[in-house]
Structure formats: C-alpha cells, structure tokens
Amino acid sequence: MRYQSKLFVFLFSFLTSLSAWAQQYPDRPIKWIVPYPPAGTTDVLARIVAQPLSEILGQQVIVENRPGAGNNIGTEAVIKSAPDGYTMLLVNPANGINATLYKNLPFNFIRDIAPVAGIVRTPNVMVVPANFPANNVAEFLAYCKNNVSKINMASSGSGTSVHMSGELFKSMTGCNMLHVPYKGAGPALVDLIGNQVQVLFDNLPSSAGHIKAGRLKALAVTSEKREPSFPNVPTVGDTVPGYEATAWFGVGMPRGTPPAIINRMNAAINRAISEPKTRERLAELGGALIVGTPEDFGRIIQAETAKWEKVVKFSGATAE
Image (cartoon, rainbow, N blue to C red; front, side, top):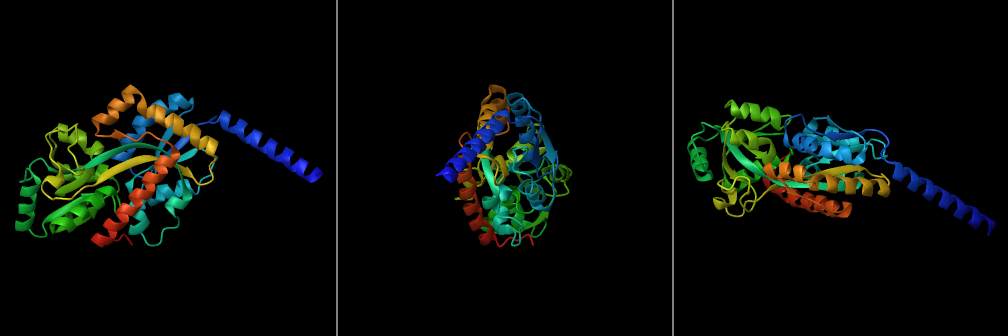
C-alpha cells in the first residue's frame, strides 16, 4: 500500500512537471530543417510560415537548409535529434515516396516521425523553357514522338514529387525522357530557364513567379482540377485521362516528442497559416491550406505513402 502511494506521488509529480515544462515551451529558438537548398518550394513555404509562427510562439523559428540524398539527409537529422520540440522537419512528398524508392533507408519515416501539422497541398506544374516549340501537352507529346531520346526531364531530386510526377507522365504516355536530378528546385529551374533541360514537373510555388514573368511556359497543372491562381492553364488529365499528382507539405518532429508540445505547435501552425496575410501568400502560390490535428496530418502521410508506393513500383524507378 505504501509502495503504491509513493508510486502515485511520483507519477503525479512527474506529470505535473511535464505539464509545466510544456506550458513554458518554447523558451529558446526552434530549428526548422528544410531538406532542400534555398529557392525551392519547401524553402519558400517554410519561410512564408516561419515569420508568423515566430511571432505566435514568441521565439524565433530558424529555417535551416539541409539538402542531400533526395531529402533523406535532412530527414534523418531530424529523426536523430532530441525529441524536445526544438527541431522540426518540413515534411514533403519525398518522405512518402522514399519509403519505396530507397531500399535501405536507416529509418522508417512513419514509425520514426511524429506528425505535427499540415501546411498546404499544391499541384505540380509541367513547365518548359519560354521558347520551347510546344504550347500544350498534346504538342509536347508530338514533339516527344518526333525527337526520341532528346528530352531531358529535370527534377528537384530523385524521389521527390517532381520526379515521380514526371515518371507517372512517362509511364502513362510512353514519352521517353531522360531523368536529370538536381539538388533542389532552385538549380533545376536555372538550367530549365537556360534551356539546358527541356521540362520540369515542378511544385507550383517555386515556378509561379517564373511563369508570371514569362521566363517559363506552363503547359499544364498536375491536379485533377484547374488551379484558381492560373485559371487558363489546363490539367495534364485533359490530355492524358486519369493523370493526377499533387504535393503536400507539413511539419514533423522526432518520435517521442511529448504530446503537449506537439499539440502546442499544431495550434500555433494552424493559427499561422490561417492568418489573412499568410493565407493570401500561400494562395498566390497555388496552396490549399491543410488545417487539422496531428492525427489528421498523420493520416495524410500514411495515405500518400501508400499511393506513391504504387507509382514507384509501376514506374520501376529506383534511387539506389
């Protein structure tokens, strides 16, 4: 009886101190790892959200680019960090795709990451250089047929949604394109604008400015429906029936992060992306908000991982 009483006192004290610690969180800056170089979609989205999030939390949220290995270096860094709420990951489609694309990952993403909150879901956009001799998907396919093995398809890295959107297009059309992976969308866009590569199925946020400025030509968006921010751009599915691919982004923390901290960050992120200025900036980039609980975002991760597993296996793509 005395042992049970002492155990109760210990557990009560422990839970009380844990609750107090969570209430004080955060009391120092938070590191937000983006597993890609600057200028790509993941980086753009993180910086848009980091500012209002810092104001809400009362501590600076510092965006740190940690590119390499198709998103896996930055992801592993977060997974191996202390589960104290001070290191978080910009979760993106590659996390779901890589589970199948890579055969020997040193982690299991669904098991090792704690879902925190969603941010946005965006279509990809099929873009070509401004002077490319095709103005729509049908003309692109005709060009592909008449120029066999002459189309280089850039991507922001093996295993990204950019890469797999292109692989899905190849598998559904028979268009023969050579995959050229880059370390992020930024350098891929530079070479696309410079005509070093011919096509990119880019996340819309990182290409939107170049499209509006006339540096790139948008042939189609990859979503099922047209994107409101580019109403005159058709969908790939208008020409290739059944084609659909979208990118999704959110936040994760290492497994074992206290639920109270995850819930605190979830509430802060939902509030940050719902603020009028932030919502407007994300909408301009073609982003539809993902507002919900950590469990809601966890279900998105699981569903997208299952979806892209089928695409990876169907395409035969590998990264190792």
